[in-house]
Image (cartoon, rainbow, N blue to C red):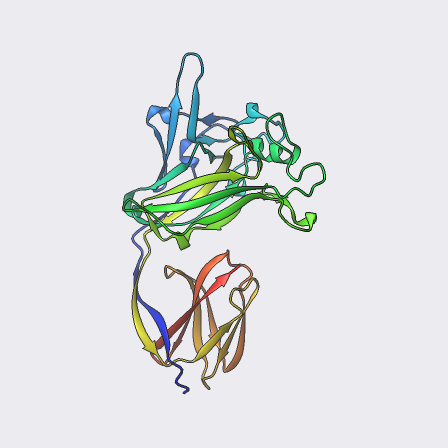
Length: 324
């Protein structure tokens, strides 16, 4: 056996304390309705997350920011009068209810229960009808994305950060709700379907912060309506316990990053077992590898960082790769 020493991580102990999904169906909203004041509690609770709502009931003008819970279905009416709808007309997979974020500065999401200080694994995102139609067609306050020529490099971006023990994380995850910056205008898009986003690279968190930015900015700030929709937030307390070991297992993984296919060169003469897992130890796929070159289809994986681990004769070695 060849002796190319690799510094690898052996995940020898993981434990799953809790995992839950906030789908917002627990509010039992009638279809075509919304709740924008959290029954005066200041928070909406679903699964193991809580999302704050700041509602001001002024005799002259009531207003809110933060989060609302919605089951609105209107995908055609433009403007502020249709403030609470998602452009999909429903939640993920046709569910009735979803969360709507109105970002005045930032919108926060707090972990609670057994997942406090742990991981937000993933969530689904989409545009509100208000923001989608504003970007698609323009309105009295905001421009049509792309401009008259279609060549303006417009964007509407969600930036997501975490805070743990009072410290804001150095990393962030960016998600473009609309992107018109491509040289080929055929690639320009505005999100209109629920889209999966892996947040596990942010790591453990007490709460998550969402920020919106747009290329369309005026004298008073962003002109694009500052709304987005969220559903099916999965939280987990799956925590890796890692030990650094020297391993003599010799294999090579490429290309890295990859969008569709991952190749592995195995120089032993006996087959072995390979697994692909998230950075926190959740096994996604398992394969047998044979001597020579092996090919794995990873096109169905979400974008993010994964670990390919090889087990052979009591030894374990792993390499990380990025799925685009």
